[in-house]
Length: 129
Image (cartoon, rainbow, N blue to C red; front, side, top):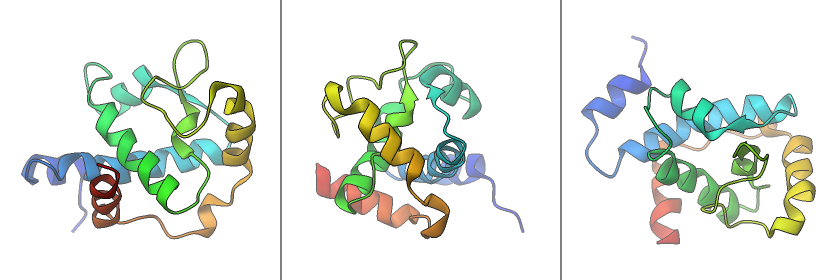
């Protein structure tokens, strides 16, 4: 049977929902990175069925912490504001390194690695807190 992210999130305990959405976000961002594309926060929120960007903070945090703890380029740097820069919650690069780090994300072989599991996202989040 096909599993839907929305069904998993709806039946998940509090504290698990963001990790489930992190896996969904990972898949989307890997595709964008492979095409050398960025995505705006509002577009990502809309794609995931959110009315605004607020839920993205913890979701993107799970991804950001996983990348950081596993020595991967900062995948969430490609989620940007209208001015093309990541939001204030992004802490994996200084503003003067944004272009360099974004290029690292674009050049990385994301499809060459196994996607993280929901549990790995949860562990990364817990380790960072």
